[in-house]
Image (cartoon, rainbow, N blue to C red; front, side, top):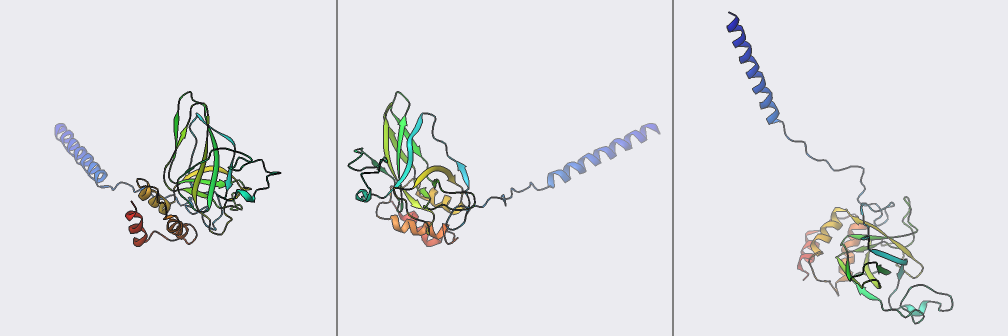
Length: 241
C-alpha cells in the first residue's frame, strides 16, 4: 500500500514538471519595445531640444586648437581685417585649409592637433552632428546644425596641426547658415531612423559632388517636414556612384 502511494506521488510529480516545462516552452519571448521617451526629431528642423544619439568623443591623441568656427567659403572679403583675429583662410591668417566632405550651408573650420609622435588619421563618422553653442535644451540657437553625411578621413601629421574645412549639410532650414560669428561644438552621432538610413546608403559611396542640393532637399524633407524617405528618394540615393 505504501509503495503504491509513493509510486502515485512520483507519477503526479513527473506530470506536473512536464506540464510546467511545456507551458514555459510555449511562452513567447518578449519583444523589445521602442523607447517612447526618445524624441528622434529633437533639434531637427523647428523641433527644439538637443539632437538624440550617442555623443561623439575624439580619440585621446587628438586635440582641437581654439574654437570650431563657422564660415562662408570665398567670402573672406566680408571680414573686417582690422579687428578680426579668427582662424580663417584670409590674407591676415595665411594657413592651408583642406576641404573635406560635401555639404551646403554649414561650413566648419577646425584646427586639429596630433599629440602622437607618428602620423595618424582621424575618421569622423557619417551621421555626426555639429551644434551651435547658442543651443539650449529648449531652443535651437541661431545657426544651422551641421550633419556629416559620409565618413571623413583627416590626415594628422605627427606632433603637428591639421587645418580642416568640413562641409556639412543643414539640419534646420529656418535657421541662419554658418558664418564667421558662429561657434560650434561636436555633438552626437544621430540615431534618427530616417537620417540613419540615408547615412547607411551613402556610407560606401563616393563624395557626391554636384548632387549636394538634391541631398540637402531630402534631408530637409526629413528634418523640417517630418517625412520618411520615399521610394523615389531611396532609388535616387542608391543610384549615386
